[in-house]
Length: 194
Length: 194
Image (cartoon, rainbow over all chains, first blue to last red; front, top):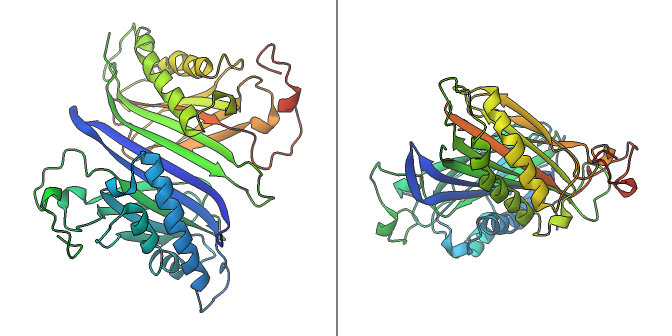
């Protein structure tokens, strides 16, 4: 593996009531976050291909971790998202190199399908920075009940020469969704949008 | 007796490979189980609250077992532990103290009669409050390599009338422990201290 991983943190969140009303079945989402060394920290490097390869590795590893944390088979996942936070000696473009060129393919391999764009966010920040990972349905981006976000944070990361890479996967939408729009049973699944 | 109403749970697992030094043969793993429950005493002074500790016992056991499960399933793999609580703004610090018995004894039971006192902390705070949960060796509080802490929190909890309860377990020493003191191999195991 090219990525030099310092730590991996997984989060599983389960919501079983909201405003005193039962959420049945509970909504569940998981995030797997890797803290890796930034090979380009402190210097301008034109060719970012090493980070693209690292993105491909982490796409597979973190999706598997997130799905395992939920205890479901990949194809049972409903929504997904990705995010990265670059430590202060790196560039925002380093997050882009990890997230965009190659990370998606292994994510979709693990989850079976995934016609929709994987929603993403990125930032540069210090230790304990908060990452809000956007979430959307994996097969149809317009499914309104699955527009969501998951916050993750690791108190000792990213250090200056590190990057924090996160993938979130759910087996459900928001608790008690009721703002209309396309529902998951109406998905055509042809264009990744509806 | 008031019912234990759970709004959400969060399970988080950290796997630490290194912290700038040599990569560990066996990564250190730390896990935290958090539950957000309704505080039956929020908003008023209630004199007699002790009985709620009994109501919390099944939740304590469930959370303790969930930690053993995510750390590999074998209670013998667990070497450190700690606990904590955050009381929402309509409650009092004393409500957090209700967690000592059901949280602490649940972990000791599950770990086969661990001898050391379970290190703990508590506070009153709003949603997103962070809590640094102290960690010590399960059989001898003075084992220096196992003094540790894990930061936990949930963005949307505790609300004013909620309690956030937490248990933490770890599989070993700090990843590069090297400041001497009592070693885990030197434990006498008689008094829970050394």
